[in-house]
Length: 552
Image (cartoon, rainbow, N blue to C red):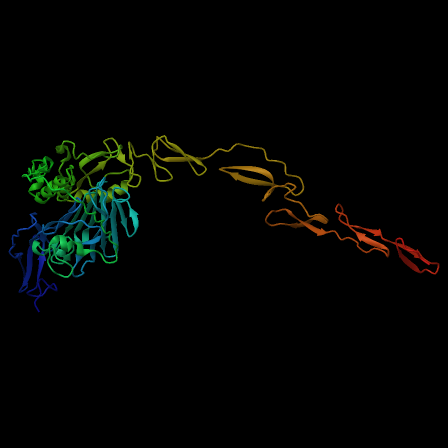
């Protein structure tokens, strides 16, 4: 057997080395040749997105191109499938947006629709439910603007475990699953699902269609039949979940319409912003056509200015790494008002810095390494910093943390337990001292049966004479009538007082003949009262006569 340089590498064996080079052992010598890669095919992505370069191996020598699979849901009923099939659908139920045809990665994405309130909402989905492996993530707008639950426990982004990563800018929540290169964006007017074709190519179904760069099969029903998108979409409801049946409006009688006239074309000016110079940097990355159509459709059918299509497109641009500051170009029609303590930023950090250095080190580095590390949202103004993600308070400086986790500024004082605490200005640390209690002289508890009792009231101790049940009073020791009591030598282990023993008074109820024992209410024992006459003869014989009787 031939070896190369006395190593266990056999003749004819090849292996990869650095700089995309392959080494081969040939007749005891090592020769190197450049790694030969297969020809790269250029694809045309039907969704208009740019090709994604995917390396075949970890050495990043050979690669191939793939198309991105991105599904969009925005406004009240606009859908854009993975392969750019556009349709409208609006029903109130829980539907599969994404479901694997053959289970490989255990990924399921469900949208839970609810009945919209037309007066204050332009977006119907109340919750997005993402299930991956043993994790279930719920993103919802019902209670507050952007609430996240992981396995039924509420979390406050940024959040990260060994499988998931969640970031938020108040306006947009981003869920990432790195090991399958999957990303989900959720906001009050849009849902974006980004899947890699290398993991999910040809293996998805649901309202988002099939990720395979072929729009013809995107609107497939659960039985495999290709139908119109609006018909197939309603068939992807999740079994076992109740649906809301919309109320059918009552029929009305209408008069004959006036003679028809040619309607003037409806082209709202605000929709033209999508194809203006404002969005030009993004137009070459993401085709704006479907969003322009939905913008005009929403406004022309409602006669109300609707910014959701612009907002959805801008979010899509940010997700692709192209941040657009677009709201100022709408003449105030799409202005966003943040809470009074925050300011709007079109291109803010995915992870806002906080007073927690460990939090910053854990999440900011990963965020800055991302290709799209900005998103619109409400942020702390200059000169302030976010205290933490739970209290969501902007503070001028990172002072101290109170007992409930709330921020305390230098010089603040508060009471914690039985201590008075201060956020020390010099050391920027919490210093606590015990509360001072007034000094009082102890009472004299020298009477029999008394002891000194300590009682803590708030944080100070007061003293009194009594037992553990209270002060020594007539009510605390009141023996029953007709009892003899004495203080014994044994001690009660609880009260530490000598045990008082009481026994009933024994009365002599034996009366001589002719007498009767009678009691009175004011005395313990009664007396013998004569009731008959008694006569004793000289012979010492005794006779008893009832009163008023005669003896012979």
